[in-house]
Each structure stands twice: as C-alpha cells, then as structure tokens.
Image 1: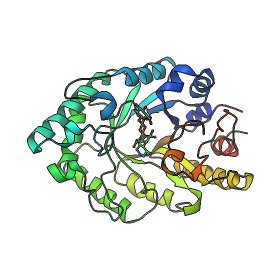
Image 2: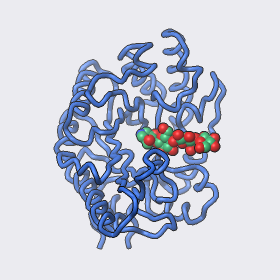
Image 3: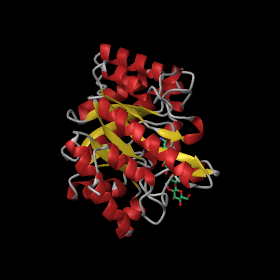
Image 4: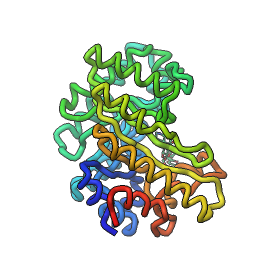
Length: 318
Ligand code: G3I
C-alpha cells in the first residue's frame, strides 16, 4: 500500500502518531513503521511536565530531544504535548501559591518552548490541555483553583513570546461532537481571540469507543470552530473496542477511522490527524480500561488491521 504519509501529503494534511520513547529507541519494527507511514509525531509522555522539569528548574530533555531528533531525521513535524495540564505535573508545582505558580508556569513554558523554537520540525504546541469538565464548567484543577481562568490566557501569551511561529492549541477529549463541553470550548476560544489572546488551533483528542457510538456531528463541530478562524486537528485518535477482539468489531472500528479521516478531509481548516500510537502493543487503553483495548491500526505484532486499510483508503489509497 502507498504509505499513509504520502497519501495525506497529497491531500494537504498530516498523518501522525504518538511516540513512546522506549520502542522508538529499541525496536526496529516500531521505528520502520514510524518513519515510513507518518509525517508527524507527538510525544506520548516525553514532553509532559513530570518528564521535562521534575523539580524546580531541573530539566531533563532526553526523551523530548530523542523524539525531535527522530522527526528531523525523517522529515516529520512535531506537535509539542503538553505545557499546562492538571495531570502528570509534579507535586512541587501543585503546592505553590498563586504568584509562584504563575511564575513556575511562565518559566516552564519559556524554557521548554524556547528550546525548540528555532527547530523547524516543532510546529505546534498543546498549550493548555483538558481545562473543562463534561458539563462545560472549568475543570476544578489546581491551576484553576489557584489562578482562576486567567492561567489559560497567560499560558498562551507566554508560549507566543517563546515561539512566535508555533501554532498554539487548546486540546480536550469528549469535544468531538457538539455538546456542552465542546460548546464551552467554542465560547472560550471565541472570547480569547476577541481579547487578542494567541489561540491558533483547537485539538479534538478523539479517544473514541465503539460502545458509545460515533460522534456523527464531528465534521459540523470542526466547521464551527474553523469559522472562528482557528486551525483544527484531531490530536489523539484511537478507537477502543470491548475485549475480546473479533472481526466484526474490527469492521466497526475501521468505519470509525474512515469517518474521522473523511471529516478532516471535508474541513479545509483541519490540518491533520494524530493517532495515539499505532500498535496495540503500546496503548494507554488497557491500563485505563481493563476490559477494552485493540484501539489502534496495527496489532501487537505490527500486522495491519482493517483500521489501517480504512485510513489508507479514506486518504485516497487504492
Ligand atoms: O514513568 C513511569 C515509570 O517510571 C514506571 O516504571 C511506569 C510503571 O507503570 O510508569 C511510568 O509512568 C506511566 C507513564 O504513562 C509513562 O509510561 C504512568 O504510570 C502512566 O499513568 C502514564 O500514562 C499516560 C497517561 O497519558 C497519563 O495520564 C499514557 O501513557 C498516555 O497515553 C496518556 O495520554 C493522555 C494524553 O496525554 C492526554 N489525553 C488523554 C491521553 C490518554 O489518557
């Protein structure tokens, strides 16, 4: 089959994956697919706060650099994930008072974004991640509880100052369809942009599950965000099924992947799609949902599944 990256590029889109650092370093089969099929990479964990700045102003860029270097060598774009999140942030940050917390956030963003600002592979960042509850109110995180919603605008301004060329994104899950959470996100993006806060992009994670149905208004939802003037992208796509895996479930899953690709192709402002991994050998799903899994387009032996063929075909492959 024609590689996904060739097909996507011909449509003006990226097709990416979330990289785990260990197999990227140690497994030839993983590396081969990573470089052959994808033209974009997101670090699954290596750029998060706990990985990069485990204690105050003590930095570890080994995993982040590994991924950026791989991308440069393979002519791939990197999406930085993620600057400000309530999860995977060390305790030393969570316990700070308001003034010190804002300073820590600024220092973190300035140093991490600044490190890659002149690297042309690093093209975008998730500046804030998962700031909403399901009902559309702001998430009761240590960020929000200490700083109020101003931490969001501040984070975008710090990121813009550190890399004026990167696309700056707000990212969340369960915002693929039109619902209370995605509408809260829409209202926030509209209001931030009206205040000249540099929000360039909205990321729809896309952690889908076949038992919950496909968000059939995905394209319509992307289009309403695009009308605000932002780029949109699917940032963490996977489609989990209830175990055991069967060929009937593979078929349903493949249709979900087709639907996501078709929605992105139909919306000019959709820059591309990142899959949250590519092989069932390395996926967050079974660790979090013990009776679910098999969410990715390659099986745990690196053989393609119907989901791979679906993505390839939807991108124009034959
Ligand atoms: O780093 C430790 C390691 O030292 C230890 O040996 C190992 C033992 O289990 O755990 C390692 O940390 C794990 C880390 O992944 C790296 O493998 C954490 O326990 C584990 O919780 C963590 O899970 C990640 C999760 O984010 C954390 O919230 C997943 O890999 C990652 O796929 C997942 O990704 C998130 C996105 O960032 C945001 N959107 C949702 C998505 C899925 O949850």
